[in-house]
Length: 594
Image (tube, rainbow, N blue to C red; front, top):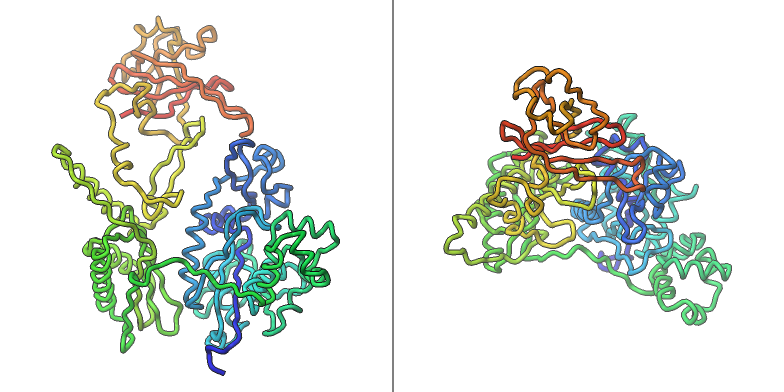
């Protein structure tokens, strides 16, 4: 039988609770303690988006108010970032091309499917038609995919069937009972790689899988719940009211009546699962013009040869991008090795660029780092692809711009270089969020690639927003109203001369002790700012204080936090940001102004 006439075989890889898996893979210490991902709802406030197993065992559930979750269990709280979830899935999709050339994400509907809590993909789909014999069979193929997941601290449920719908159903629902098979612990690492330690096994459970024999799709999914057809919550609820809970029971009802009462979506999903209606694997969009490949006649381990190949492909990719007026935002470099898994390197950029020299330095620098840390097997093919591009934006320079355009370009190249050397998650920019507590009033996101909302990074806006006003004194309309440096945690300080009349009697900067009779706990004037404070074994005299500014945390965040902040200037001309905790009465130094 020719390959083109072979029956289709699809592999579905479901990553249960993917947002939590992604966070725990980055921070393994969170795996054995309760963890909650939260987001803000406009009407309900802080809501639980997802929780790990330890938190769910204590009663925490998705869509629960965060205040209710924190009342049930003392848990770690992290913000839910759906855009980072998609980025992580896209990265896995690109890496999964080592198992199949056709890899895509599941296509979600406008409404959340029954059994899901988030409207975002959690599954990878691989077309493995005619490929199983390359891995020794379908079961060895699943074991290798499981090894690949375990090496990255991920856990998956896998299934192979004749259709996407059947593979999806088996992966999402067929692996929950006793009929599924677990990958043995000895197989969770590829040959030549260190075995999982006991701590790793606690973090990453064994993957599960199901394989439906070819031509037996209907029998394989007959006993699965009706939600396995990827139906909306209302449709599943209506079928359950009719007494239909499994796919086998659905087959006993007339199709015409189902379409009339429950819509064509039910019939379409049913036909897709049984193979009566085709459903393609929707791969990630990428332009074939941006993919370059260099096979080698003889495999090589020579480092200079590898670096030279990267430089040549970088120059050719830059030329293609320049002819189309495009710039690369993300580049994937894949090294196919002899008898070893391929090495995949991903490069994110701060702004679209097609400068050959810049791309050469970034890619060759990243490859040199890899060559220093690991021993590569012989290379037989090198592939370079720009997986994310954007039009180059050209702006006419102002007559009196003072070299700002050149500075922006140099800063963009610096950010790209640091991200390539240190990693995309190590070069971050701050983003303000609605939080009254200053230490939690910003979040950090990578500066390269795309912004969190999926739009192109606007470099001009980024750089111009950091320009301060010419006035040195912080005021309400100035960015300097908040300090440029925050202490984490705030530093407890001693205060003295609570009454403003005692300022003149305060010791000079450098005096070891406050003047006699100026105790720091003047109960009668606690609402007034101190006349002096002790920081780093030195008493600083306050000449002017602006405040208080009352900051209080929301009731839904647990114990109340109430603070009175003052902006103070000292005789030495320094500006400090000091507050008094209204619950304890203790004074703290929280930041300084440049």
